[in-house]
Image (tube, rainbow, N blue to C red; front, side, top):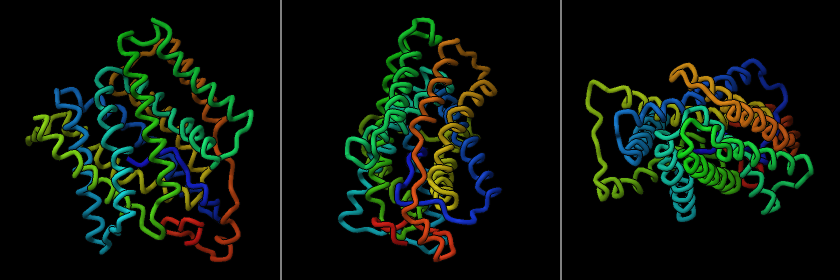
Length: 332
């Protein structure tokens, strides 16, 4: 799973970006990704094992994107270094956090899931600061502290969660978010140059399927989705479609409108995740959870990346928006 919150520091806001198009993509990503939290909870309703849910999501997503590669006559590049890149991204972005994510989905509400995933940009910044990719500032440090406080509001008060025993699953989701953050940094620094983002995601999902296939068979968790599909099966299919489309859309938004503009998806994903949980499951939340949501929004605002100008003149000179990922030094 590609991190929906991390942005490429090498990409800058191109001139004359179509504002309406950017806004529509931003709203689409926020609404669709927010829906995935409710779909995850829905997928666990029929008792399908979390490992199998994750496997089916990756398998169907890989199949859909492989069709895209076939019709566009593109093949994922394969070299020794790229195999390592695909392997790391598959483990950090799908295999490990995805399995934890679906385990937690049966224990906590969709709204709480969306709040915990919002820690991804905070954890990404912490890692980026440690490796000196991003500069520390008092404002961003305050944002990190707000993020920690938001999680504390979920797990510390006994009356925060409907089931106090679900608190460990909130912590597990934060650990899953750390995997997504690590994956985002790998993508930002090691993504293959001049390659269609959908092709990259295809290779990562195929790698995840290869890793998980023996795990599914050895654990005896394999289960076929029989026709007609159950509500859980439709939810898995929906998540797969999101996996196959939204990630590429996010990266296209980065090159279309810039990383700072694209980073606003973090707010919409979290907010829409809470709203979808209310609409679909009629979820009700304690005052602690609403306070956690508010504090997390403040944290995201404080940690939001600053606009970069590394490629601004380059885009201006070319007069076009690149359709592929840039090279490691910003070339396209």
